[in-house]
Length: 263
Image 1 (cartoon, rainbow, N blue to C red):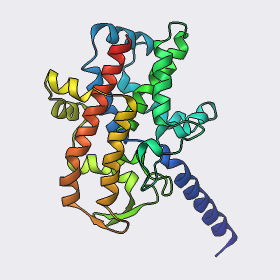
Image 2 (tube, helix red, strand yellow; image 1 turned 120 degrees about the vertical axis):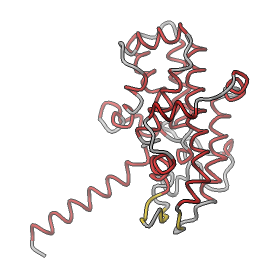
Image 3 (cartoon, one colour; image 1 turned 180 degrees about the vertical axis):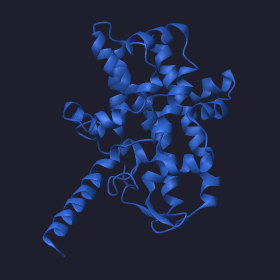
Image 4 (cartoon, rainbow, N blue to C red; image 1 turned 135 degrees about the vertical axis):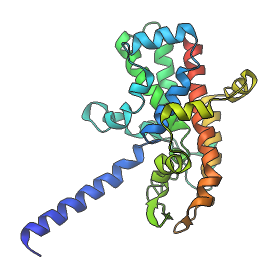
């Protein structure tokens, strides 16, 4: 191997290492976050819709739905890297999970809600809080964001998905959605956003912690259903696509419920 080849080899190895370290901050893929915000936007009351439009300066929640995944990797917002997830290792109950000193997705959501509710908060503070909230509510409902710390939320949990080795986190970010339906985010919203008022009320009951624990119960099942090295294909998609649909719907309805309650 020539010296130049060695340099390139080291560069790509370092790039891969950096990617593995940072990827655990990613939530649903772009479409998943867009679906969550699209569903939420359809359930805002008049006051909330007006407030959201003003805070986001005319742009929609969908426009900002994925902003945090990029922002968290910039120096200005590096403090939010751990805010996308809540790691809970195998065998640990949700209530007993050690707290992340730098914050997690649950505490981050609670903090943004408090900023938005506080009349003393500045316009810019509320604007930032809303941009964070619309993203973190999606993260809260992506099962692998309650994944094990030991495997970086499924990023080091390798399975074979349709003949290719992939990590479980990435499969849940994007592959389950895309394998289940080749829909646009608006088509996703059209299809899964079909609930009665009674059903919506039931979905929105509870606290942020209870919603997180609900996701964690699903996370446990996801790990059990995909041991490391297992081969996943059509049967996996058939089993878990309805769960992904359910989680996107929950995230969207609950985001709307929070914003309606605030405004």
